[in-house]
Image (cartoon, rainbow, N blue to C red; front, side, top):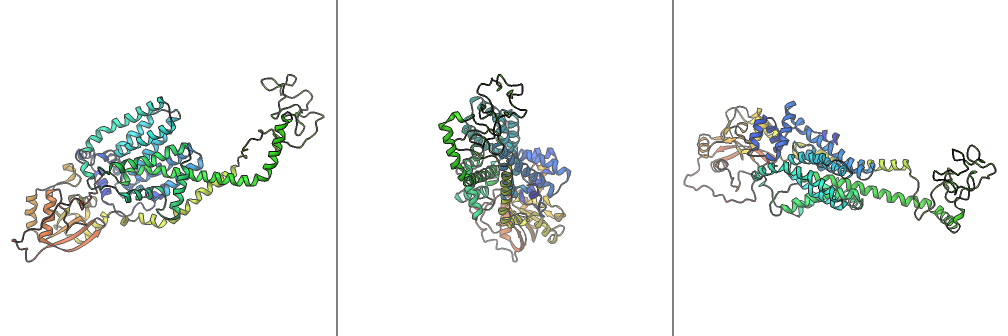
Length: 595
């Protein structure tokens, strides 16, 4: 996971949300605290973490490195869960499968908190399992609290863990310990939840999820590739893994409960995005690995039964003889053992410590030799109840005799399963490469800034529409050095906002009246647009530029564009009424500064 996360980490540009992380992380702690009172309180702890990271070395690699480490930690914790709940090979397969899942790799290279939240959830789940085995509940509660502060939607994990406890039918004292730890974590979260509730406008861009949303989430979670044989094989293995008992009782609620709750709530108040429940993905590789382990076990048993079938009939016949004449069991010897010994080598008249009253201190009959053989005993062929290879006593045959363990074959199965994961990885390799390109993100702020550096001259007027896209100039300030930001009144760091405080609408109109050309850094679906901004300053920008200027040229990078607008000549007839804009909430552009 660490290797995949570092592969292509410096992709040559940040996108909008990463730009927010970068500019906020480089502010001072008092400036960050000032910001959180008005916006992005849900990311407060993450911004403080990034402040410490970026203080060491500001840059795109350092920005994404905590997410890479978070994803690597999650892969290790998923493996540890598989080992603890099943066996080592299940843990190995699950950890590798988590590492090669494309959705994991995508967020491992994001300068946001979601990969770190996933690590916190996996760690809390492992601590839950340890607590159920008798360990303390307080490490579990502490990890929960930190994870909830990194992103409050992680609180849905408690519903999954409650279902795990219910499936395990734990006693009342266990419920009490869990409730104390979980309640403490929720109590720490409550002040943050109260503040972030007042900032809920930040997620106004979200829409009600539909069937396609749920299907995309399932395909992203359940398989390395979203279609084809690999996908359906993963689905079948998950279904087989549902019978894995203890592992399934942990992995299935983790995989299903948080997404289902958020999808359901979002039907009434849209709050759903796949990254908000990325941590639930950890349940899928555990179930796939458990299903593969069960399949390997079934195939192995069928293979052994086919090999042992000729011998089984002979064993059954001998077992029948022993059942008819139980007095023969233990009355026979092998390789010269005393004829009065039982199948374990003890005389029927031995004491509680297993020695015959007449035996020596080492348990040998006085008439036996140093190796325990009677002088006159004859060597007899091996019979039922005795291992034919070693001559040692073996358990009597039962209804389903278990063959001896074969470590070499077990290791080969483990290795084969690990190597089999190379098939879906190689199959999806083109998708992995594309995901590491800056063009695969919603926009590339570095590309827009580089264009601005080639086109803009000192003193050129610039507008950002909506004002959020000023993050382009804040993340890459050098190309915008010397330009005139017509709308900016106070910087974001001083005003406690993300992109700064802007001038009054009348002042902006006066400033635009004196320019014949203006550069616009805007959302790409604006100009022209029938969207009416909620901010009055943004309404002036949109109305004046769209009504009095004509676009000369533009450059688009995903959701953001750089465009040059020239005032129309001859000027627009003043008697012509300005175009009317109707409020239609559906096309409202999403704000990249979202939780």
